[in-house]
Length: 195
Image (spheres, one colour):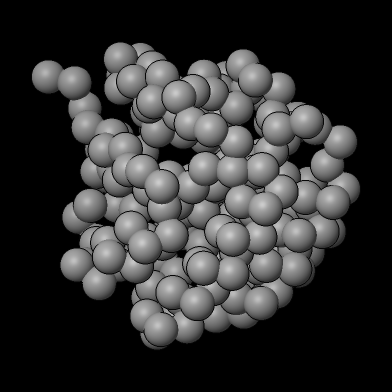
């Protein structure tokens, strides 16, 4: 069950962003579902945005199942999946025209190319790119390369007035990851369960 107050608070803060903004969204493991509802349903869904969801944590199929369980419309969500190829091979994405597999979370240039391709293909006036999560990408890449990737990706998205959300899990974060994300983001949001 999600906490609609937390989801609503996330969506409200995102609605204050200017086009081309990049935001760091810190969450606890317990607030992940609330963040999904706030970002994908209450924010992007209400604004008719195309969303490019880059997943390096769990497969796009698992995320789609979670979204379905939360009654979140997935018709405008496109996935760049960095983990399924390692786990299951290429068969999964071949069945889904909204998913692109990247061979490994270390293939950062391929992630950028897939995001760029989906951005160009999108007919939506507003676009959102979600990176889920920076912690997972940091496991597979050294900090210098990951920092360079974030700078190039966010700069390119900012030039196209696309919104960028970089998710980080507080329990798995380090000062190095936090500082890397803060360098490329305009603002930060902390999603915590309401007491």
